[in-house]
Length: 283
Image (cartoon, rainbow, N blue to C red):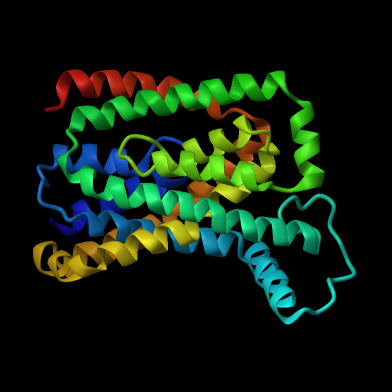
């Protein structure tokens, strides 16, 4: 892999990680076009770690609030006096505690599914990845239809926070998103909206819950760290991670604005033709 290819893959990862179009799927298509068939799965995960830094930077205040809630919980200190009714995840200590429990449940479900999918991903064909693009498109369309037909659910979730059964459903959908071609952010946000989570909270929760998920995937594949260094080289990896972080932060800012407007189904106009063309021309 050349440095230029590393940069291009990093840019692709940064853009596709947060937009609901599947970064892993786009990386696999790009690697096929570049004839990079021997790239370890860990390299893709390292690019995900770079975009994970963008998540931490963007949501640093919310993450800090959740950490403070957790510390008050385990030390049994009184809850904070000030509240933010517009913050659906940690505006109050009660909501923050529910969010922490939800993150644990979602991560556990995703982890179980991820252990299985990590074993089958290397054997999946590029056509499966392209079919995943189409599946993601229909998830976005279907969740948009459901949300518009059930507007009352959004107001209810705003005050109640994320419930355990919703966290389990979101974990299942995020687990589905570990497959190449099926967007993790797209499936997680769609799953959140399908079970009645507020649109804004769905977007925020989707990215915050990606932190333990991506870290867990890295730990599972960390044994291949030497293969990445020897097979690819340090320069392409570093260049890819830097470009993934920069473009990841930009795409995250863009997507949060799109989520507030409720227009995620528009990405289906890109994903469906991409999936069909890929299934026809890629081998």
